Image (cartoon, rainbow, N blue to C red):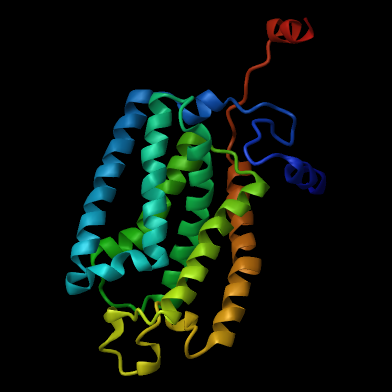
Length: 255
């Protein structure tokens, strides 16, 4: 197992060769059969996600300017972009292949983080609109089924940098949001005024900069690697689609 991990660490960001030295069949991975059914299912998923996108914004009522400021919305738009890109690659696998691969690697990890964080730390048992449940769990499950069961994408260890490429800019944005005094109109009715202006009470750079800094470091150095190991493990457990090596192929390679 350790030897396998060492080999995995040496693979490039979008290596088509696995640690077992087998070559992943990228065409079959990104454009599996039956194409018609998969394209139809992706269009349905895009339709449901579009409906959720619209209703989610409408649920913000007079605070629509706040919608794109949260990590949940960043994760949703990232996942939506992946669905669009993956639909294109099913139709024409040679187009947007690396973009789709990278989007899935970033999306599935960010979505897992959002889902765990919401159900463990945020949810208080109250009834929420469907869009909230969709963004904090349902979407993650659907994307995981699409990526790991339908496509069987191989995740590479170096793709963890793609996850950091989303999380670190968000943390920087949370600092900018705090320092510019943009505020959070969704929290104006909270009795605890100290967290009114923060995007998240646990990430308050104005009132608790030290705590926010420690939390950010833990997210980057602990949470992301742990979550990535889980998703990478899932991608390893699912049987991949490899290029079938025949005697004719071997002869051609020797020539």
